Every structure is written in C-alpha cells, then in structure tokens.
Length: 553
Image (cartoon, rainbow, N blue to C red; front, side, top):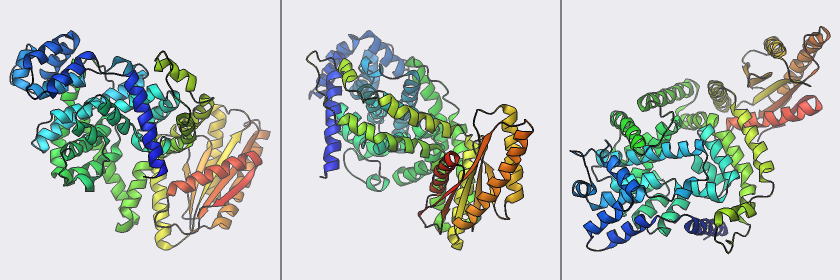
C-alpha cells in the first residue's frame, strides 16, 4: 500500500473515530439492531422497541402508507406494518429514520435542501430500480440510498467552513462533488459514510456497497454479495444527480451504466422517471421536509436528451468519429465544473494542513467545541477570495459559456485535423474607476467595431462576460501573427478610447490583450487551457499595459 493510500486511510479513520464519538445512533435504533441480529427475531419486542419513540412510529407509518411502498391497504399500527412489510423492511426504516439530530446542526439551509433532495431521490430511485428493472426486493437499496451522503454532514461538522465553501461551489456549479472532494481532500464523503455505518454495526453488505468504486466494467457481471446493491446504487446516484441536482451531463453515463447492468433503454428510463417524481414528493411530504425547486423530472430528462443531441450535432459537423467522444466530454463538463475543480485544487493545501494538525478530544468529550480550537489558521483568508473568484467566473450566463466552449472545441478539432496552429486573443477595456452603464455600453460598441475592422477572414470575436471583454479565436495563426493582430486591435482601441475621453464620454481606461497559442493541438489537448492561459496573460497585460502572450504546450 502506498504512503498516499495509508495517509488517506488514516485520515478517514481519524474522522470516523471523531464522528463515532460525536454522532451515535439513538437508543431505539441500537436496540433494533440488537433484536434483528438474533437468529430468532422477537417480533413483539421489535414492535415495542419502535413504539417507545412515538415520532419514529408516526414517521414509519406515514412512509409505509405512501406511494413509495404501494401497500394494498392502509396500515394503522406497527402490528399491521410488520404483517404486511415483514421484519427486514421495518428494521431498515427504523434505522433510516433514526439518525442523530446533531448530524444536521452544521449544515446551512441551502446545504440541507441539497442533501435531502439528493438523498430522497436516490433512495426512492434505488427501490424502484431494484424492483422494476432487476425484479429484486428494494428495501436494502432504499436504506443505502437514504444514508449514502451522511459523510457530507460529517465533513461539515468536522472540517467546517472550508468544506462548506467547497460544497457550496459544487451546489452552485452543479459539479461532481465526489470529484471535487478527491481533488481537494484526497478521498470522498462516501468513504466516510461507509466508515460511520460500519462503526454503527450496520450490515456489512451495505457498508461495502456504499464504499465501492462505481466502475461499470467491474460490477456489470460481478457475483459478490453486495454487487447487486452496488449496481442499483450506481444507477440511483446518477438519476439523483440528473433530476435532483440537474446535472444534465450525467445522462450519457446513466445510459451506459444502465445498458451494462440491466439493459436500460430510453423508453424504460422515461417510465422510471415519470413514476419517480410523485413518490419523491410524497416521501418529502410525509417526512415533513420542505424541499424547494424539485422541478419536473420528465422535463429535465428531455432537456438532458436535447443537450446530448446538440453536442453530438456540433461535434459531428466538423470532427471525425474518433474525436467525437473527447469533444463531447469537454463540452459537457467544462461550463459547469472547471471553475469548481480549480477551486478544489487550490483548497487542497488548506485541507492537508488541517488534517496534519493534532485532533485529540478534550477531557470533556465535547468534540463540537474542540473543532473551534483546530480550525485552519486564517482559513477565511485562504478560501473566500478563491470562492469569490470562482463565482465571478460563473456569473457569465450558461448559454454563453456553452457557446464559447463549443466553438473552442470545434476550433481545436479543426486545427488538429489540419495540423494548424491555433491562437486565442482576450481583449479588455478596464476603467480606473467603475464604469457607468452608459460608459459600459459605449465600450461594448467600441470593442465590436474594432474587432470587425481588424479581424481577418475565418476569425471570430465572442462576447466574454458582458464586461468589456472579447474573446477572439484565431485559427491557423501562430504566436507572432496573433500578437501582431492583438497589437493592431489594442492600438485601434486606444485611439477610440482616447477620442471618447477627450469628448467626456469615457473616463480614463486601460486597453490590453492576452494571447495564448498552441502550435499543433494534440489529441488530448484541452481547449480550456487556451482560455486559462489567455486570462493569465491578460491579467499581466492590464497591470503593465499592452499585449502579453504565452505558448501552450
């Protein structure tokens, strides 16, 4: 085992140990576990145990009477529930709805809304997938789906503000939280969940399924005891991301995994999602959860299919079949996730510093208070500027981001196939003071006119952020040619800006350009790297004036 793997395992064990001391299962849940572990289950004892918690009893009865379980008649007491559901489903419900209340105390409203929306969709989807697609009982799957994100709540309580910032960015950008966690923490919240469930002595198959990596080729035909649960959870997770978090880009992964696991096709997916929405809404209602903005699941699915079609058409227009998958991946992932990924990578040092500090609990055992004594030094100064920078980038409308990304991907594909260089030019007009609305409008017209006057055939200028910026794509232009064009445009902008300043129409401002060039894009070249490099050059150019350039390898 590598040093990095050992370090990751040690960190997870430390967090689980702290969480196990701070978040313990309520007494009723512990007794339910003991009663059901016996070879001959004491049915009467189980019923009496659950009834000692009236709130839990009401919650269970409301859920079993909902459309989620679809029982043939109304259940009025736990005796009927046991008769109709059986011991195992009732045990799972008792465990699923007996969570430590202090787990939820560190989460803000937006985070709790995200947590419950994702968890409920995943739990209901897991049950439906197991029963409808695999024709197997779905009780274990429901519980696993309900509990899988407990690690998020543990991290909010253990790490605090830096993780809250990362989670907030993932929610806002509709990014892959697991990927961001691995980039920043070195592990993901599901591994923490598995550790906590194991600490609570929950079934080994449940623990193993939550912790298992989601690899289609590994689980498609696997015969391990928990393999079925892994397959169901994988599909339910993707469904929850699609309709719960509106991450439309996961649809291709969902279709591919569904085809490999259970021959899921588009009609069956449509039926599954149509049946899912009312059950999720009813489950949220019976649990007294006010989940905002659940959306129309069928409409979300339609939007995801439309996005897939747009991507396929855009790529197919100019790229060969061998490049289509690569371009589609770039188009789908970059608009939402690249800024969040950059933030995660920048936060990694902060998290490493945090986990390297001693975390022994004080004699009082109040770990919640102990967290205040070991927070990252000046962590607010570390992550909040990064978070604000990422938010500023994402303020650009999504439609515009999609357009830029698609055009950049197509340009890279064209230049790669023709073995030509590609340059991008990022232009800016920055005022010494904040511009008025009228000044911004004049600058936008000036940028538009200068680009039209100076650009050669085959080049195109795209609005960038709607904030006195233009992105110019220059196919078949090497670095020297791109810099020459940048200087022509910047000189023209300076003259125009000077005239407006003298006329009192514009206050003093700086005109600058950043240029990035790739001599010949390789097959794995990322179009966004040109944009990132051009932005860095532009920042340097604004400080010094003029044009700055770099070549991307």
